[in-house]
Image 1 (cartoon, one colour):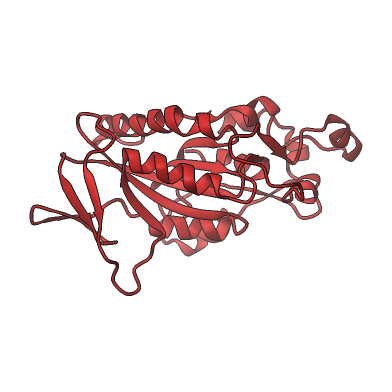
Image 2 (cartoon, one colour):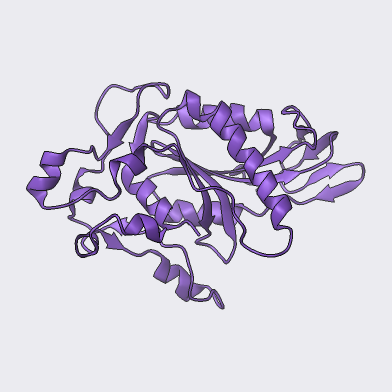
Length: 273
């Protein structure tokens, strides 16, 4: 993300930012010196003063995107501030691409993540012009990574993926069961909780999409079993078709689905690894 930060005057940026990650790092033993920085605008800054939920009649997810705060050159000049991120960057629907972050299993992971990016880009983003897909974030909860984050208005979906053979799998809220085998999906619940704490104004959920080897969006079949007491519904495990359907419903049902939340998007971009 250094390339993005160079577009912003460092002396002015200091007035915007405070880092949430320091507290996370202090509480994480052995977390190292490299962590995500989803910096927030400082209280009293132009960004914090103007970033609010618009009090306008509810728009639909398919409406043209509206930026919050708006890119008003006169207002920025009067306040002596600059935008958190340039307008052309905020206007992009896709940020970053799957990339290597280790030496083991990198190719298979990148191919799997590329399938997720293509799925969302082709079938979700055209229906929700304000949605912004950020690929490859450092997790604020541990030393892991978030494959994809999809933001629209005040809703944020964190997305991981798996590649499994075709067939019918039973999802009980903890594991996928198939042919006497139990398969645990990627652990996302603690990452969702951490991101929810960082962004209390958002509704944050986690999704694991199960891709099939042949690209069939309806395979494998995922059967949702009755939940046990205390099982969280924060994480959804779905096939590709289920991800498209679920993300559209989740994002479009938010309070301002056609809003580009610029302050949150800027913080997500700063958290890219």
